[in-house]
Length: 404
Image (cartoon, rainbow, N blue to C red; front, side, top):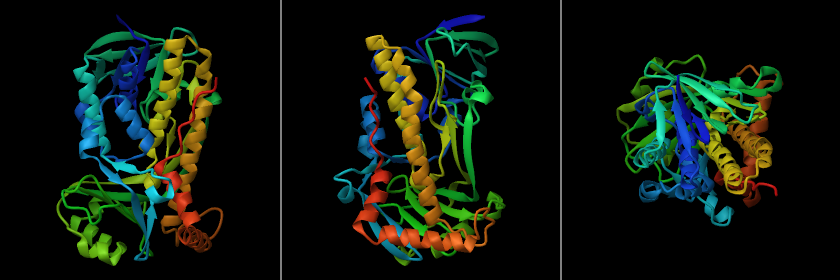
């Protein structure tokens, strides 16, 4: 048995685990990261790339913002199109100057990986049989296997950044966990292509044929999505069929500007809302998808993980710089308050923008629900106050400070 020691053990080398590790390293706090797959596999995960200002500030504080600041695109607004009629959401004007940055999650992850490697910080990729132990004690540890050898990582605290299917959440006894979930009756078919985007800003489309999103990764790379039934499979959709359906859901001006091409990646993602309470058990902290998942409509998945990181980072600073161990009890309440705001916003926006007609809803007829949501969206888009409600949540609510 190989014995290792660190201060904060991080399970998961996705963007939240890497960002937390980089921030803690800047404060002289030791970390070791364990990841079950290869670094290349992590970088192969295609995810969203709309970053709230709070996330951008964290990346800058971590010292890995050079490429993001150079290549990332500042977005001051976005469009919502209802059957071709567009309304502009002026994020900057409606929020007193706040904006978002378009920079792919893969790029953020690569920057963080490179920075960790350059700093000589320890990461074990392809670590298997990872299992936390004694998390309610003052000396937690993690057992794992690496290259055929057994290891024990002794630590002060554990950050579970290992996603929905990871081991961290399962470490909390089932009788102490409350899990909230809603599975949506449709999915998103996404296509990535090396084609110029139809717009400099994102376009969210509510259409009688179903929802669509025209997104972008750069001036030359586009990401598009279509609402599809859960019964659809990727192989059901040729590139040509995708482009033809997208044209019908986009507003006319965007459809006319659409440049099609061969897909680099195509996949269908189910939509769900999920929250686990609490997000802390002893000295184990759940971060990001390990504790919560949102439908992607409001661009809150990665950003909610970042707010968890921000809270845990503040707590670890106080623990190691001021010797205050009592503050760790603040993590779950603070994190969950912002998580539930993000969950509600994502649920609300999803309900307003997707087509629920002819779907099996348990609480009311789908036609009635659809008319409610049509009216809801019309109400919020028709006034500055309504658009401000959307904008303030889209750019991200402020991070909550620790109590003293």
